[in-house]
Length: 187
Ligand SMILES: Nc1nc2c(ncn2[C@@H]2O[C@H](COP(=O)(O)OP(=O)(O)OP(=O)(O)O)[C@@H](O)[C@H]2O)c(=O)[nH]1
Ligand SMILES: [Zn+2]
Image 1 (cartoon, rainbow, N blue to C red):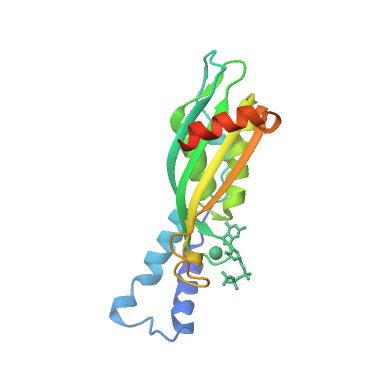
Image 2 (image 1 turned 90 degrees about the vertical axis):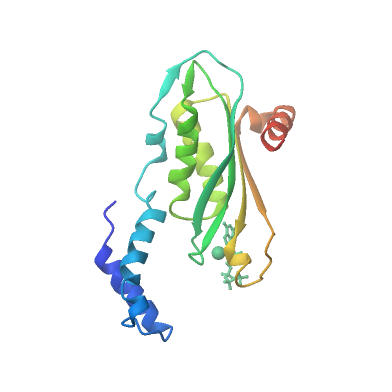
């Protein structure tokens, strides 16, 4: 995705003017440039297909659960463009030896989080990415996050955390399997 740095910089300049700041005062002179760079970084997942992150697939006959938990992530709430951040836990049961690299699960989370987002959509997109690419027996994703739009503004409830889950395959069908994986993921 090609970011329009010039447009971003003039938008930031306009924003500063609109709140009554003087964008030409010394401390703010480089701010439009810095903020443009920052947006390019925090939105670098835009235009990427998270399935491309699951490039390493090993033919390993392990048809039991694999869990990577406590994957830290930072995202930007699409309603207020302020951060929400926390941890994602990703579990899947490979099928037919379709085992991916552990770091690739964290890369999927990273790509999906680095765009204007909702926590629910991060959770379901990570689950669907694994389903589409690996065709596993089951997938479970838990995301726990704190939303700055609920802490520094608005309802102002610091410490409130939001938990979302997405399950696919066997974890959708079997309450027992789901309870087991959730306890491993959150334990
Ligand atoms: N479901 C969901 N809601 C979110 C997420 N991030 C922020 N929100 C909510 O989006 C809602 C937007 O509500 P609005 O009433 O349109 O906006 P607002 O007046 O700024 O709302 P307040 O935050 O209550 O002040 C708020 O309730 C936010 O808490 C998210 O990831 N998922
Ligand atoms: Zn918000």
